[in-house]
Image 1 (cartoon, rainbow, N blue to C red):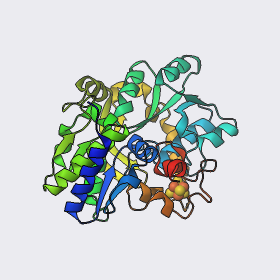
Image 2: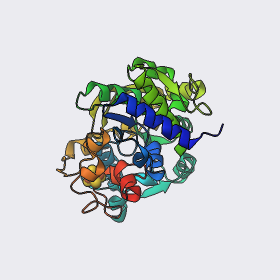
Image 3: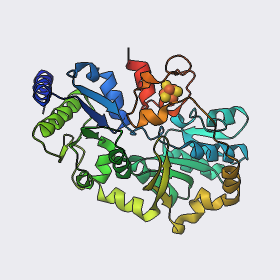
Image 4: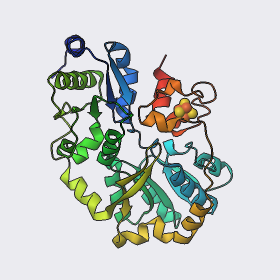
Length: 346
Ligand code: SF4
């Protein structure tokens, strides 16, 4: 069904007028941040409606210490394979790109099947598994094929709990992620008593989700609605979830900017310990972690990821920190708020 952009914008304006008070709506998906910027949607919002980004970019929320472990493995001579947008993310010591420049065997893969094929030639190769439920299923499959993985995968709903528990983060509604929801479904969000709408990725789909959120707020409702029915079902993708739970179990995890969140991560089950870098390289990883020295940085990614400041409010934005010289993960990833603001903000 073709959506009428003008009608949606008028309805958003009418609803916002009736609500009257200032409102902050948070998008929880890096692809939504990108689409909102690409379509100039922030500039179309009524004065009292502000769109802010949350921790939806998987590369951005990956903790520095996980980058440090991958860098440490690479510098110790272990071949590693990563997705390209991870290369420039700064760790406490250096990025994987710098490790490669120093001679480490770091390969970029575009698809996890390439890592599986590569591991046949490079014995002991470690793949950097990160991201939310969207990519976890593919990593689970690769582990079953024998790929060794350093697991930094995360699950999304506990991060939403953490955001809601932080009283400084005043948000009136969530634009829930599209891809993640295609796996976990919408039912899981019913635990959160806040207006929520799962949004699609084109401009009209996002406007529709904003319009639905404002209608909920106007009617004092806190329900979960789905504006992306072509892909997202209430029960998600049970087959993918079964595969994930066969290979992984829930664990605590550290998120860049949000710190440790209980039961928000995944670790590889003992049954697959021969594919778990934490087991295969246990002593080396222990040594690497012991030697990590937290680096002081003026990067404000942590605040950006919680919607507490906008990228432009970081003093480094556009001056010291640019696409060519990123100082933090939020500028490195194409889905990062700072990267998106840098490319489309003007
Ligand atoms: Fe960090 Fe750069 Fe974003 Fe500032 S602009 S928060 S330094 S990534």
